[in-house]
Length: 117
Length: 113
Image 1 (tube, rainbow over the protein chains, first blue to last red):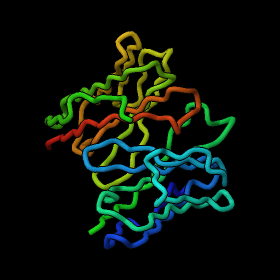
Image 2 (cartoon, each protein chain N blue to C red):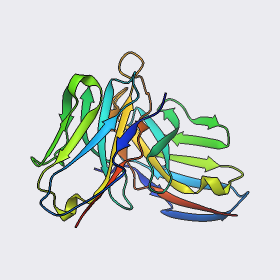
Image 3 (cartoon, rainbow over the protein chains, first blue to last red):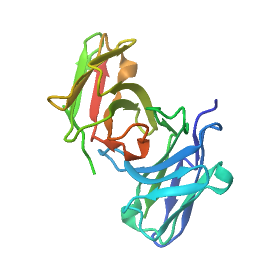
Image 4 (cartoon, helix red, strand yellow):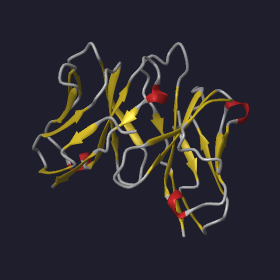
């Protein structure tokens, strides 16, 4: 178990550019979540995958945001035409699916810190 | 949306002292979870308490849950400098439904050596 890994750790981009983040969950976990966290706040749910299916998207996820999880393994989160308000820590988490998912905790990666200038 | 409200927002103690953080929430829950976050890192799960439980222990951690008051507390005994972090509570409204976790704003704990 190598944990959840996210890449890159830091990303600085200019407003209007596109960025893509990657998350590799724990290999036996079939549930994957993306969260966004700004300074002094708790995580805000963005989207959720069960295997390769994206089952839920938050209203926070505007049409500039898209997430994929091809083959139910790693996931990518892309932000198009970045805005300064997109500056935040983007966290990925994974957890086991049924039947072991009963109250199973989330395992988080160390996040990607995005700064939009 | 934020449901949990941690109290205090910030706490500074000396090494060896106990630290108590509180979390209040608004709706009925299935379980409540506590996580720790070191600066610039991801969150680490500490302990989960179900709605039919009143107290749980894990090492130096003790969590209580009072569903009548819709509140929980996290006690860290004999604190260490390494306990310096932000602590978040998260409530799950449904069983096994972690995508519906609702997070508080966190308590920032500083343990001074």
